[in-house]
Length: 309
Ligand code: GLN
Image (cartoon, rainbow, N blue to C red; front, top):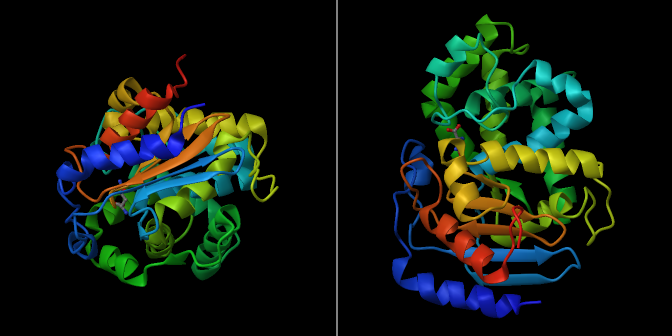
């Protein structure tokens, strides 16, 4: 077994001169204020050991990484019936693309592009007031991370509510196709709050550990999903987790992963560890520039890959 702390230390040291690369997401005004000169990484192994580097304890806006947790809740509620509402194919287009939705009659390609995630949120809201659905997600993530201090950044949620025109367009479009059951403002209220979950790399890696460990969190003993469901969520992250950068991420990193425009990337080495990397500067397709580089270095140095040794 490689010395994971030494690997993380070397990655941090080598990337330090590059911290600040990329461009912070500025289409959400509150995210535009984030200092780009930050980098953190955390690895939690299935035997419960935690390794950290850099700003691993600094909370950041997890944005689209939250779609993995909402998807897990939705599958728990409606099971495979979810796939009537959303597809399972990579989109090959931007996370907020509108044009594809019309071609496909309001059924989004996958649960990780914005349209798909909004439909998934609508599913989780069934039988709940919006506030209750937000509470359910927050409780779920705190339970997964085993950390009651995880919060939602209200300022980020408000900022996106005021400027999320494209998301309103996507949701209205799907409502026209009857693929959204609740009022659009309610669904997006929940969606913007889920995206505004604020978590550190360590909290994120802990929360996602069940996906590396056959659906159960070995640190808490909590059984979250079946092994089969964990595999399937990982399959979706691998094929769709980085939008039209998914092929590139599979090629360079070789692990299922999910990115967010807050600069976070969550990744899974099945049977071995869960990983979170964060640096706010993004590349052209909206994924953390240094986060992806750091994960590639980690995968290379540990030999972790779902494609072979
Ligand atoms: N809240 C963001 C949005 O809807 C999430 C996008 C992302 O992280 N890729 O635009």
